Length: 188
Image (tube, rainbow, N blue to C red; front, top):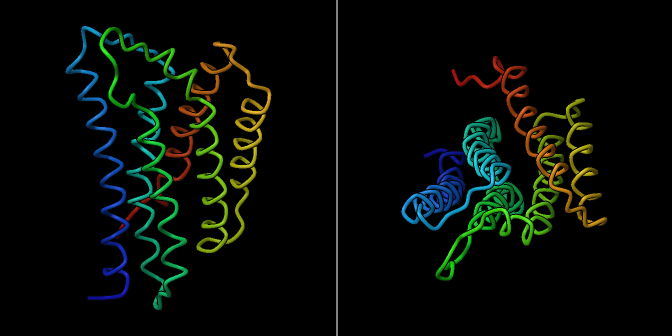
């Protein structure tokens, strides 16, 4: 077993737990369908966090070029999947009470926590990208994302149109990123 094969196991387990959180959360919403009031920006975030889990699992393959692993390096590279897991958990109500499950209300109660953990995720992404790939102009986009989310948190913006726009812009950014990086996201 190579060092990469050894470390990828725990990273894959953490990512799998996050995917499990999302799939369980969605299944629970479907199971209680008659009680749930969906909020489409919240649903976009669920899709985005799910895709980020899959993308991270895919991108971790690029770490196979590391020939020697040290515990601090490994701990750093596990922070991103751990953060994704936390984001996945924040997306769903925990033991919702009887009555209606209003995802719009849930979203606006929890968006600050979610955005804060998304900012942390972006900081980790910048550091990781610099370590693995070096400087890339896409880092400016990540900084813009962090600035936008940070402003929404600090100003406590609760304007529905703004949150809808942010969700749509993030979804479009993910789609554009997939199109631009199509040939780079290839495992031979």
